[in-house]
Image 1: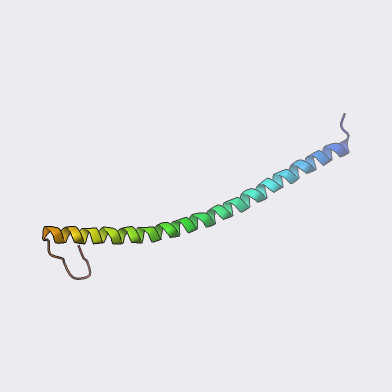
Image 2: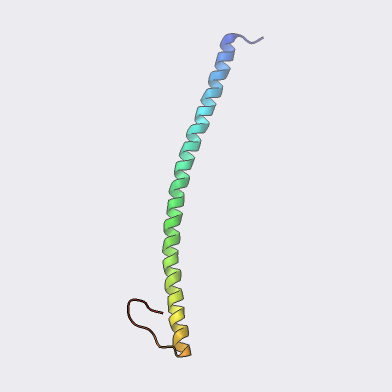
Length: 76
């Protein structure tokens, strides 16, 4: 049979392990959130480049078809 002191020690070790897992999970979630923010920023930058390329392609296609460019704040 196990003594009461040994039982307490085993429970203490179990609780320490659980605390370590909780701390790891908390830190991992923080890092994942930071990584997600970085990825969102990079995707926003990439979207700007894609939009610029699409606009240029649309202008080129319109000029080839002979559609006049529309001036003003909104361009087609």
